[in-house]
Amino acid sequence: MNTFSSLTPLLIIVAGALLVLILEVFLKKEKKDYLAYISIVFLLGSVYAGLRFWNQNPSYFNGKLLLDNFALFFIFILAIATILVTLISIKYIFLQNTNHGEYYALLLLALSGMMIMVSSTDFLIIFLGLEVLSVSSYALAGLKREDPLSSEAAAKYFLLGCFASAFIIFGLALLYGVTQSTDITVFVQSFADPNLSLLAVAGIGLIIIGLGFKIAVIPFHMWTPDVYQGSPTPVTAFFSVGPKVVGFAVLIRIFQPYWRAAVNTEAVFAALWIIAVLTMVIGNLIALRQTNVKRILAYSSIAHAGYLLVAILSRDNAGLLFYLMVYLFMNVGAFSAVIALSKKNKEYLELDDYAGIGFKYPWIGATFSIFLISLAGFPPTGGFLAKFYVFSTAVREGLITLVVIAVLASLVSVYYYLRIIIYMYMKEPSRDITIHTENPALFFVLFLCLYGVLQLGIFPGNVLVFIKQAVASIL
Amino acid sequence: MIEIFIVFLIFGLLGIVLIFMNKFLGPSRTNPSKEKQFECGSPFLQKGINPIPIKFYLVAFLFLLFDIEVVFFFPWALIFKEMGLTAFIVMFAYIFILAIGFIYAWKKGAFKWEN
Image (cartoon, rainbow over all chains, first blue to last red; front, side, top):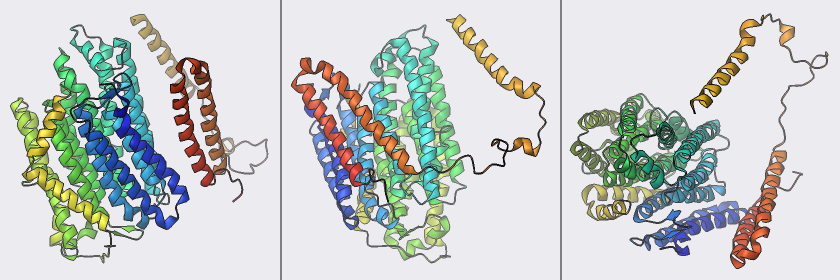
C-alpha cells in the first residue's frame, strides 16, 4: 500500500522538533519546561499515528520507506525511550545548568533519524537516517558546555562516529560494486552465488564493523565509557538505548535474509561469534574494576550487546526484540535512579557516594536495586526472562559453547551489579549526600520502568504476541 | 583486475618509502635556534595560532546554509513546468523549514555583530 499518510509518524516528529526549536527562542528561561511537555505530546501523537498502521504495511517513496510491523515495533520502542528520556531531563537540565532549549529539539531529531533507519531496507536510506541520528547525538553529548568531560565526550563521539560512518559507506560502495543495488534484499542475494566475489565479503564485513561501533561491541567499544561518562546523564540513557536498538534492528534486517540466502556463512558467522565472545567476556571483566557508576553501566551496556549478538547468531529474532524491550526499561530505569541522586550543579556518581543510600532514600535504593537485579538477570524480572529466551534458543540451535561462555560471563556480571547494591545497603555512609527530591517526572519514570521490568518478567504474554507479529512481517 | 591491484600496491608502497626516505637518509643535526619559529629574522612577536572570534565561524556557517539553499532552486526551476503543483508544495515545505532556521538564528542573535 503506497500512501503518503505512511509518512505521518515521521512528519509529526520533525514538526515537533521544529516547533520546539522555534518556541525555544521566544520562551522565557523559566518557562522552558513547556518544551518538554510539547515534545511529549508530539511523541505520543507519533506513536498513535504509527500504531494505526499495525498489520497494514504501508510504504512510500516507491517502497523505500516501509512501515511494516517490524519497523512499527521499533518506532514504538524508540519513541517510548525518547518519552522517558524527555521526562527525566526536565529537572536535570535545569539543575545541571544545561538548560539550552535545543535539547528537546535535538532529541526529537535524533529520534527522527532512528525512525528512518528502522523503516527502510535500502542501505543508502539507512545511512541517511544514521547521519541524522549521529549529528544530533554529537551535539547532545557536548551539551554541558562548561564541563570539559562533556566536550571530550562530544569530540570522541564525533571522531569515532565519523569513522564508523566511513566504514559503512565504504562497505556499501563495495556491495554496490558487486550487485549494482543498495537494497539489502538484493545485495544479500549475491551471497547465494557459490563463486562469491571477495568484494562482497569485504563489503558486509565493513558494514558489520561500522554497525559494531554504533552498538558498541568489543573491539569497537573504546569510545563508549568516555562518552557515557561525559555526556549529561539523561543523554547517556538515550545513547545506551537508542543507537543500540537501532543498530540491532539494522543487523536483523541484514541477517534475516542473509542466513537463508547465503551458501557459505562460515566466515561471517565466525567473525560474529568471536565479537560476541570478546564483548561478553571483556566487557564484564573491565566493569569489575570501575568505581564510577556511569562507567559501570557503560561496560554493562557493552556486555549486553554481546548477549544480543548471541541472539543474532542463533537467528532468534523474537528473543532479540524481547531482550531489547526489557533492556530499554531496565537501562533507562537504572540511569534514572542515577539521575535521582543529584542536586544543583552536583551529581553523585562515585560508588562511595552510594554508601547508605538504600536507607536514606529507600524508594530510590529499592528501585535501583531491582533494575540492577534485572540487568544481572535474576527472576522474577524481565532481565531473567530475556536472557532465558535468548540462551535457550541458542542451545536449541546447537551453540552450546557460546551459551556456556555467555552464562559464565553473566555470572561475572552479577559481582559488579550486586556491588552497587551492597554499597547502598551494607556500607556506612562516608560522605554527606543531600539530593533534590522534588522531581515528580523522574519518579514517574522510575515507576514506569519498574512496571515495565516486572510486567515483562512476570506476564510477558501480550508483548510476545506483538513481537511475533513484528517478526513475521520481515520473513 | 590484479594488474590494477599491483599498480596501486607498488605506487602506494613507493609513496610510503619516499616519505620515510628523507628521515632515514637525511642527517638530523638540530640546535635550539634551528627549532625556533622563523619570522623574517627578528624574534617572533606572537604565537602562531591565535583564537579567532567565533562570530566569523557563525557567519561562514550561515552563509553556507543559505547559499546551498539557492543551489537547490536551479534544478527546481528547470523541472517546475513538468511537475507543477507538486514541485511548488515541495519547494515551499523546504523554504518553510529554512525560514524557521532563519528566524531561530535571528532571534538567537547570530546577525548581531556587536555584543
